[in-house]
Length: 352
Ligand code: TRP
View 1: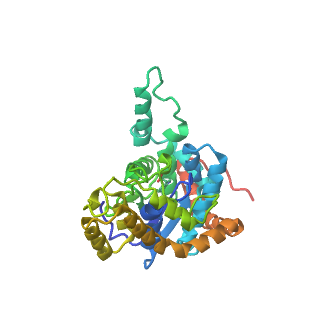
View 2: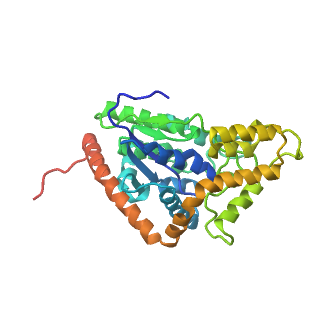
View 3: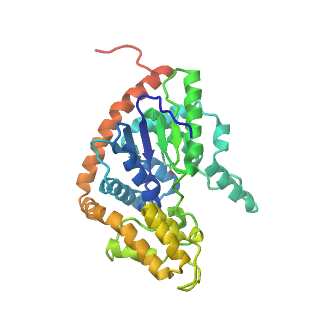
């Protein structure tokens, strides 16, 4: 990605869709780097919960609600400072969905036809006999990138940290900004995707990419209805990571191991080098799992108490989110007003 060292101030914006319990992949790939990236900098930051994106993927109201809560608690517990960061729920900022409509009206349908997520859904249908190409595909899924563009353009974000799978969406947001600016008025900043190439996408328990849609995740603080402590749950999940059948004493290939990959995301360079040697020396899978559990747990144990406190006290969380919504709306009202005026929607006269 190109850099924009010469821009005076960065405005960073990112969101994690609340359709499940935050897992290690979310933490390592999004939450931790987002929080770190704004420490010791004066960049502006907007972090939010895209719950209207959530309902595209999940139609279970209980999950949407519970996971919004778990996601909000996770961000705060992991160190997000809501005074420093504008932290809000997408649905509390109605200007965003209004802007999405406006963008819909200048966004080419053909651009959306090329979106990876939509094309993947169409491809699955194509493999089935007697099934329409668009079977089961909602307008929400089709227009998903437009709502995402509205999230970003509303706040004139300059930098959007995302996983590699989201880069196309940022490029589409640039496209939509460009079309609008050209057609009406230059109101929108062209955002840039920020992808951390160092950070591998974490592999899940079953060897596929760690993703809530595969149900193979390691939850960060345990699930929402814990029968056992969240620390015990973390241990149980780590023990479930799939390994091969090599015995203790046999040299193992770290680069083919999910365990090692996750270890790398939590360890220092010298610890990583040391673990590499232990793999070569034939560390048993059980011992490697113990070492991995300790590494993860050392990092997240300090956040656990705060997480549990917030989960037990949703009023505090709601207050934090409402404060964030107030801050966000100070920007979004102005930006929407300018956008409406640019397209010809404005009062006919001033009323006293
Ligand atoms: N689509 C993103 C994801 O699934 C979540 C998201 C929604 C987002 N709106 C955004 C990310 C705006 C960055 C900026 O990961």
